[in-house]
Image (cartoon, rainbow, N blue to C red; front, top):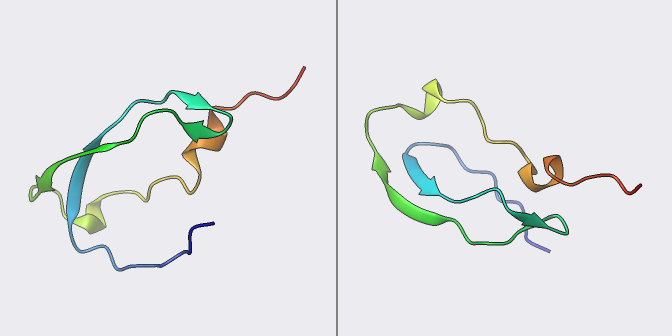
Length: 60
């Protein structure tokens, strides 16, 4: 399991990825694109804590 390490957001970066999920895990890694200097971190909403869980379906 990965340890949780809270950080203070002081930089905004852009990532690319898709939403393909298999058994609750993303199929493809995300890719770092660039540092964004146009938005300030305080202007952005936090990312979902577990976005992969949103895309899974309940068993029939």
